[in-house]
Length: 63
Image 1 (cartoon, rainbow, N blue to C red):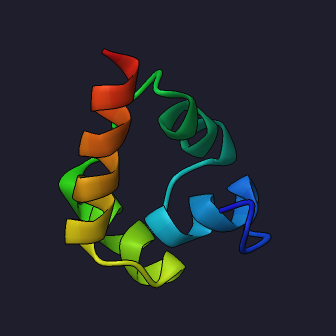
Image 2 (cartoon, rainbow, N blue to C red):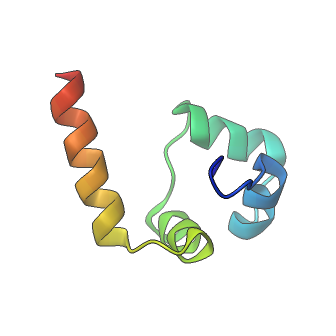
């Protein structure tokens, strides 16, 4: 989001939630729903498969 200069407020509008909920989603306090992830991917212009692959790479680096 930062690279595209997208804000948490804009994310909240995209997923139809409050700004605090969007912030909680981003920080990992609350998980995104599948529908929200699809909406976010479309908004950011990335595929769900790319997001999944990146999450897998990140998971391997952390473990």
